Structures are given as C-alpha cells and as structure tokens.
Amino acid sequence: MGVSIWQGLLSRDALAAHLIVGLAVLSAFAAAIIGGHRRQQQSTRAWRSTWSSWRTRSAPIKASILAWAVLLGGTVAWDLVSFVKQSHTFPTLSYFIGHITKHEAGRGALFALWLALGAYFALGTRTKTEHGPR
Amino acid sequence: MVVGAIIWLALAIGTLAWATVLTFARGTVLSVRAVAQWLLSAWFPRILVLSAWAVAGWHVFCQRP
Image 1: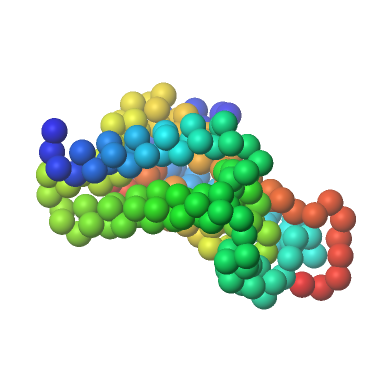
Image 2 (image 1 turned 180 degrees about the horizontal axis):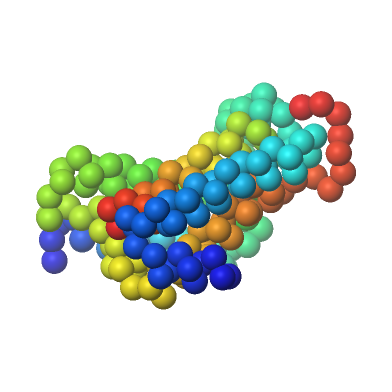
C-alpha cells in the first residue's frame, strides 16, 4: 500500500519509479520460481495438449473460447495497429491509461492493481502440496 | 470522436457484454477464473503471462503514459 502511494507521487521519469517497478518484477519472478517449484498443476507438455482438446468441448465452451479469442486478440491487434499508425486518429490503449496515470491517485491505484495482479500471476493456482519433478 | 476511439468503444462494449454473459451463464461458459487457471497451470504459460505483466508495468509506469 505504501509503495503504491509512493509510486503515485513519482513521475514516469523518476529513477525511484523505475527501481520500484524493476524490483517488483524481479520479486514476482523469484516468487514464482521459488513458490512454484514442484507445485504446478500440470507439465508444459500436458498444457500444450489442451490446445487440441477444444474440439471435443461442448458448444457453449467452444463459443466462449471464440469470444475470449476475439476480445483479447482484437484488443492486442487494434493496439498494435494504433501503435504502428502513430496518429491522433488512432489512439493507443496507453493514451487512455495515460489519462488515469497523470493523476497521483490514479497512478497509485493502478500500481496497486498491477502489484496485486503480479502476485496472483506469480503464486496463483499452485497445488497445495509438492509433487514429483515437472 | 476519432475512428480509433470508436473501435475502442466497440471493444469496451463487447467486453461489457461478455462480462454480462459470464455473470449469468456461470458453469456453462469459460469464466475469467477458468481462463486464469488454465494460463497459470504450467510453467511455460505462467512465465509468458508474468513477462507480459512485467512489460505492461514498465510501459505504463516508466514510459509514455
């Protein structure tokens, strides 16, 4: 919480802002590796095989996979197009996020959300007990 | 409103519509939680997701926005 407030008071050019973000990233990867050792739900090979299993799913599941793909893929693709165009007619997602981060409270709140997401990505869905080598 | 903003608005409306479907069709469609669990169930996708998170954070808090 305190780090988020501090980050909110910093500008994007501040060395402290860069160091805080860098430290958070390193901590997240370290936590993922240490906390996730022998605690992944499945191997990467097993995960890869789930890509082909979508054909055997029910119609609502197939439709939801398509919906997710369109939403996520569309967002990434359109942001890339806007980034390449570099025009005021094609604002990027960063442009809209910038309207939030230009305010101290917005920047701090967004940083807190980013930290929380990082913690979940690093340590979420691990198995409760250790198992064999993965 | 510029062209790009209209596309973003359409994406936002689509996201809201999908969030509504997820709220009322629990158990029959892939929820946010199910997608997250799938993405974090193995080392490779977890590292990919963390890398994307790291790049996004660097871009938002240390660069243009």
